[in-house]
Length: 74
Image 1 (cartoon, helix red, strand yellow):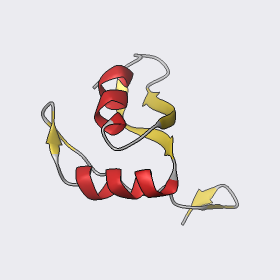
Image 2 (tube, one colour; image 1 turned 120 degrees about the vertical axis):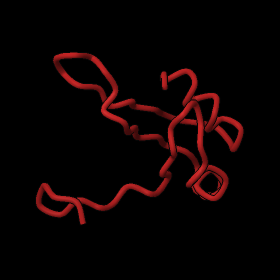
Image 3 (tube, helix red, strand yellow; image 1 turned 180 degrees about the vertical axis):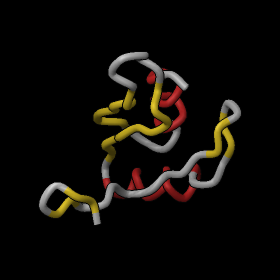
Image 4 (spheres, one colour; image 1 turned 90 degrees about the vertical axis):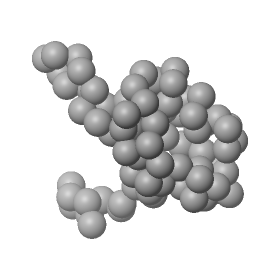
């Protein structure tokens, strides 16, 4: 997926304030995940509407980011 296609997909549920598609440093290929920021109620709608769905041949897993503690995620 591209940042543009991901932006369009989530924009159906509200305003995407920021989007970061994580890519491999050397190859430039997507690592298979991204970070998005949306308003709370819009984010909840996107999670409910997209989690587990298939898009462009990918199965989506959409969830809140887990809180980091001392450099590690919980």
